[in-house]
Image 1 (cartoon, rainbow, N blue to C red):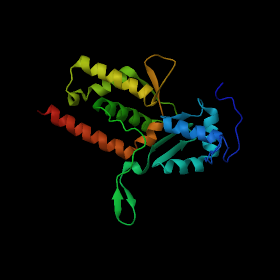
Image 2 (spheres, rainbow, N blue to C red):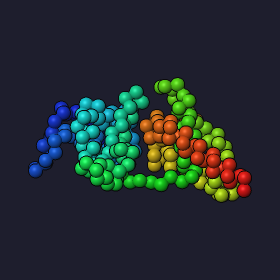
Image 3 (cartoon, rainbow, N blue to C red):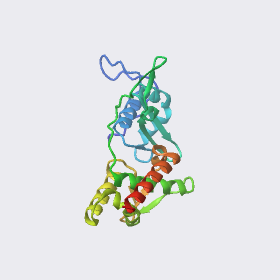
Length: 217
């Protein structure tokens, strides 16, 4: 098995001739997995998770060199990277600001993506800490359909786009996990670290205002 190796001590492993790296083999694997994303889960990647916890400071330093933050939620058993400083311009020198270089691929969310994410994040915020948040696909669809006017689509097109959005949440972003019941998914706690409550409230208010304008036409 690929993960059947002995965890090495913190410190550089000379893995090949001219190797200039300073991280252990385990920590290098952890760094690669974090960069590949979207999430490292303790239950799915035990050796890599162990390396992240044991060499967290060094990994944070390496990621900061690439303009990235490391997010570790030990209670939820997840770790991932995100663009540092929320992607805002950074100060170089005393007064000179430049745009943040992007290492990670930035994807533009569709309207339906944003609506679904807002719904999922709201549910996470209402849950008791540590409680699993399970959502039903058709309930999410019904909630999202309230904003269908913003996307200016007929019902059939809306349903196709909604299904595609949910698939992205599961496969591309790892924000929804399958459960024992078809059509029901577990919301990843990582979403709390991606959208804070203030951001959610602001976006939701903007969407509701846009919807009110659309309906008043």
